Amino acid sequence: MTRHLTIIAVLLALAAALGCSLAALAAQATELDVLKFTTGSEYRAEVAHIFVTDQAYLHRLEAQSKPIVASVTVTAYNAVTAQTDTDPNIAASMRHVRPGTVAVSRDLFDKGWVFGRKIRIEGLGIFEINDIMAARHDHSIDIFIGNNQECHAFGKRHTRAALLSI
Picture (cartoon, rainbow, N blue to C red):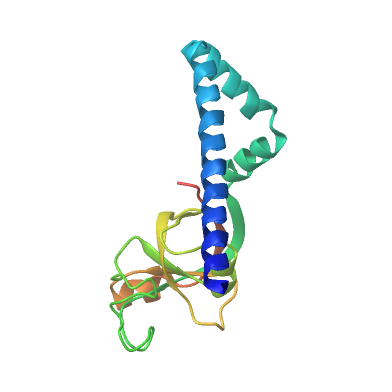
């Protein structure tokens, strides 16, 4: 008896799901019929109007187009065990360290400065985030330079960096 009730309950649930699916398909068909009678330019104009009048959408666009800027300390590192972990040629992103990449401090990483994102360091250029610095660093960026003498010559600089949306 319980088995029959379970089967009936499952069949009723399937029938309800089928009914919902058919209603959704009917709604889509109605929308498609409306689109058939709308020219392409009218449709694009209507969609553009919706986007332009949607304040939340405009705020999201604004936020995406403004880079996040931070005052940072910039240093340089190379792939030696004394400056990294036990495998100096592999970054925290599990990719090889290479020129044009940087490590960022954990506080910046937690604010969205994550692997693969591009940053612009004032006076130095555009770099890709590939690694994370040790926990003792705050508001810091470490540029990968493969030569120890060049790292020492680079020194320590205080500048601004911007997280880019590219």
